[in-house]
Length: 149
Image (cartoon, rainbow, N blue to C red; front, side, top):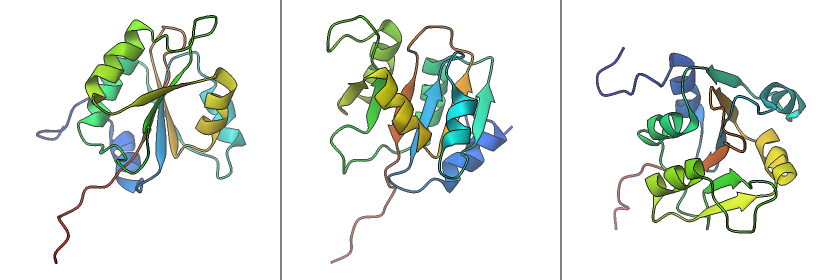
């Protein structure tokens, strides 16, 4: 345990978050997500980190406590679009995560487009989330000092 570090952030997850550079993406996935097969299909064989006792909202809160979102892209947060729902629909889980990052814009991605993007993510974190379509992707930004003139 470390002071000031959310205990949901395992040593493996902390290492991955620290290794990520700006523009890299991480997926926080539900328990039904095809994490292992997508990671195996990725160009470099991405890591899968398991948080079986943690839901996506809790995992998002922990990750976002250390993780800067990318301010150089229009939508650094993406959700898997809930099937058979109208465009713009967000589940309660998705609304809760979106509220954590407000005013940062989020996007809903069609299921197979989300899978394709997840295949290129730096890592996939598979949680114990049981809600279907409980998948979110964060694009990492930078932590920087102000530019000196």
